[in-house]
Length: 279
View 1 (cartoon, rainbow, N blue to C red):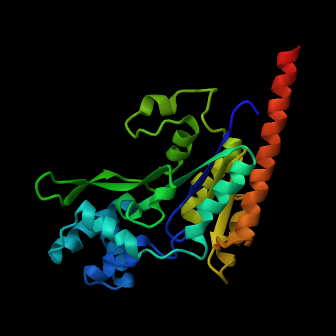
View 2 (view 1 turned 180 degrees about the horizontal axis):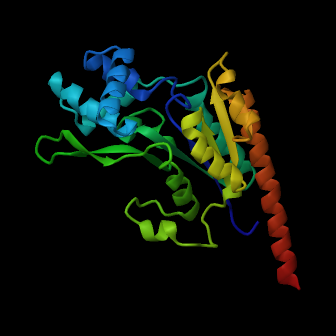
View 3 (view 1 turned 180 degrees about the vertical axis):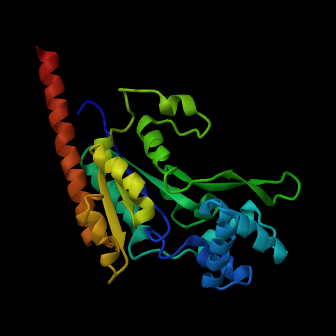
């Protein structure tokens, strides 16, 4: 092939890579709530104010941190990332997939697209594996360094814009013109995209990727296959798999087969181009 085509593997984070919502591990205990108490209070607040649930949890994080006199700084949020626990095999997954893709004379880039806190993800042990992390972000006061307003909010439908941005190579959130312009020269073809998520909140991204020729995979915790089986039955995803990233696991086999198919298609395209150029 004349150049190395790029494969983009995009991941939701909570309950896709991490075994629970990222706030559950250490933020919620730090502000004196149990996990059910915090999310129930957030749900009640959102219903009372007819508020988007993502903006609601971001507000509740600020509110509860202030009540406990905990400075909600970028540094504090980054440190929370160290306590996030992942499904089996996640930490070694990226190196194995990178090596496999390189053997096919392709390139791979990993991305996170999450409705959780980008600042927490940035503090995790796997943050270095991603080309970009897209998630909710805070504005921080220049003096106190504390969070005081949402900078970026990513709800379930807004996640889809990042699929488009990754495909076009338009990463800047402020560049609305390029993301909306029609283009025939995509940095990453949709057919070379893989989206991995865990449920209904990922459906918009799964459908966008699948319907444009890419590949969508729904993952589920051990013993909870029913959680995602309807997504497959309804044609919203291509594959379902246990959320186990271990070597030779079902998920790895699926992803490697997809990589194999992309490799074949790229070789055929390259062969066709060479034939045309020789005429």
